[in-house]
Length: 71
Length: 227
Image 1 (cartoon, each protein chain N blue to C red):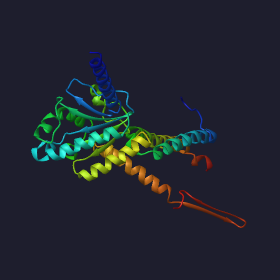
Image 2: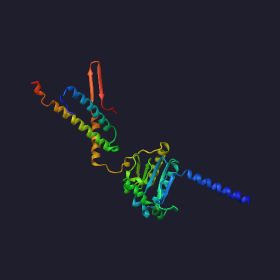
Image 3: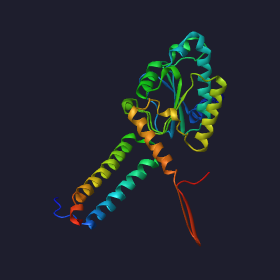
Image 4: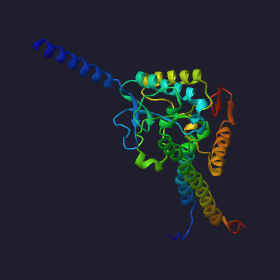
């Protein structure tokens, strides 16, 4: 899905949903012992890291060169 | 002639009655020969697995016999819903001699020990599980929630105390608490790293506090409840 133009609102929505998903995965990761389901915990941790990286990457890309607009 | 028939009938009736009564409290299940399967339809199964070669030595025959007697008593006191299982090779008189070790079906116990990753040196083992121990699908590993006890380094007094506690749990709660040794296999490195990460994040989560003091309004938030 190609996004033609970024808008602050789009990033807020993205971070809101992404943040909720990450928070849920984080809560699940911390709530039960790793030994009970190691694979599940590994998947959750990887999801948390990947989700935060993707969100950060999208935000970085959107903010790239923005300072030129203010000059 | 009639008196003889009456006496015979009474004797047969008494014999059948006592054998039925004996079978009704047979939660001490002695599985004999390779063909006989562990009976089903019990709530819990407590398997006595002899995989430790040291316990088969002649000098340990007294200890092995003592363990068997404790198994018998345990099996009789845990009720009809719970089974205590012991494996024999053949049906024969159980005595405190060298034939006892020869008649214990060690090979069958070893299959369980191998599948469930139990260390023979820590045995004999007592494994309590609520899942039927199906020998045809042992490769699936130790059932979740099972409790494993290594009796090898325990004195007869300690074993007796353990069995007493397990009897209380089985009669009172219908189950035993799974022990850390239930996951007998050593954890992989990545699992230990994950565990350490979880503990670090948990401790970090408890490290912050937030205080707000704005005149009439004051708030004090802690991540974790102070003990």
